[in-house]
Image (cartoon, rainbow, N blue to C red; front, top):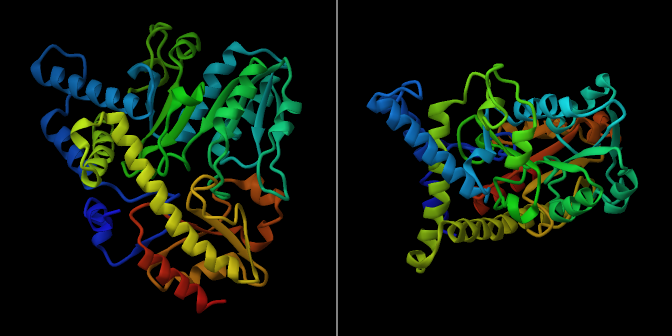
Length: 408
């Protein structure tokens, strides 16, 4: 991993600060910033007009959404719905899809999810939708697939689950979960926000029905996307103006349209993961885009495992610390989003002392409020969370560990 090359792509990393709150929002690629400027200077017009610049703007955005669809392995660019945030897109989905449901129908949510993929569904109780909770095993801190099977019924319409908890860091077996959900005749909606910065998204491989994540946590601007199978999106009522037809996907889910310049800038992210593979391989001429994406994320996962293992080895050595999640740094089990509590120190006190080291970490519930409550961690001001990504360095982790050693 050529860490110097990688860090050169992120202008903010030139500042004298260590960013380890990346699960809250990663730093932005310089190329995405340039694409925003490019779009606003050279094609900042409304779409759909007959004049040249409008046609050029439309072509730019169509090309970008096609690249995004390829990036997540969607079968069609119209399966990509762009929106301001994952929270908003999931809220739009819940309002839209529930128009096809009846009183007494059921939705299953977990107590490990960010509220973005919980509240939008539990609020449907007001319409007579029954909500069931798939609780994490309090001992293993993992979701038990057998427990899911017991919750499913012939009235289950949808299961909402996170791919990776933004607290636990554990990677859930989405393909297996999807098979179980589909065998019961239900749909699955996956929150991939905490997964997408670390691993390749492949919606067709997993056969998920809906998949969401936020680009500002995947090295881009404050924007999000939702994948939905085209047939499903076509048959779900939209929330746009009355004259939009069922086949007007994704526009019927994008009231006021989507943000043009931020969407155009997303090409900087897909290109970065192509370039990352090119930089680290002598076979770049013979690799497809998909192969390059896979190679880059394999590289990222291996490197991040080293960072996570270094930090976890230290934290596991401190008797007073309890890891909230898998204690291993294994890339097969977790992403490098690491949470813990201390026996005697408040999480807030630990973080505030690290603030003085010019290192950004965080404490709290991170909107996974039900998980923090169920684990009785509110009394600790939630957890301390260190969230690493592939532009972090071993030296930065060493500095964080040194900071911790001054505290406990």
